[in-house]
Length: 312
Image (cartoon, rainbow, N blue to C red; front, side, top):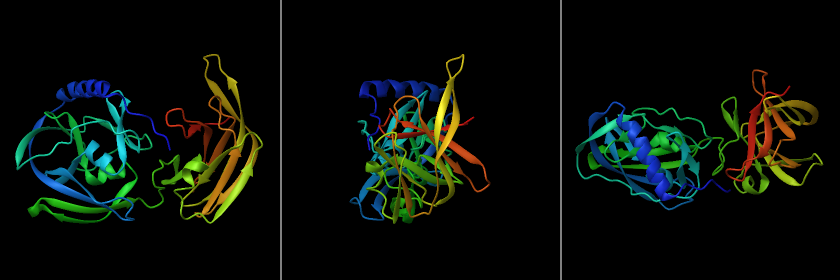
């Protein structure tokens, strides 16, 4: 998959400085930190083991955000307004990983930077929160929080505080597809709608592919619910332009109704417009509420975009 490129180094430094100015206005405390060394191993052995420098603060093991993200194949991009988004893949921005020798006291601010996960949702960190070191102008976070924002989790670990080292075995969270951000969530579980060429290489559990061609184009999408879904629909949509230039989308003909098991994929052959969407995906949750999404092209990463919408 293609991912949005990070900004140039000069622009990145300017943005860091701007966010730092904001951070300086927040409450600052002095905290004792102890250096630590983190070894990362993939559960499926996809990559060689790697090790990075971390530190302990208030008893929590935290890693530099960019260091850990890049160590497991991701990146961090500017999201505007002082926020940063964690990405799967993407261009690695040059930066200097920071390490410490021996215990020392640093100036710290907590949760002053907005961090978005791979789906673009704002993260809610656990203890100790996002840790901003004032004198270094970078954010650190708990190992679990950083991995969680990438749809990864710790499968097992060995922590040795007395020896200043920790080892973790990591892998995808249950129900997540390696290397692909979810298109949305149904009853708390992720689902996917993406170009077949991007997603089929990552799906290992599919046993049945149901093909539906709406006759509007030749682009092939794979729609997959790792937990399955009992009710889903493909709609034709029309639209009306309002006086303020906005659009109201109208539900048209039901092109396809379907049920998918966790091992099924709907291969939807259609057109993915760069302009106004012509079709929508409707899914029904466990409480009977339907959620609708316009199907369109994502100009930022070259993939498929599902935009939540209230169809009339």
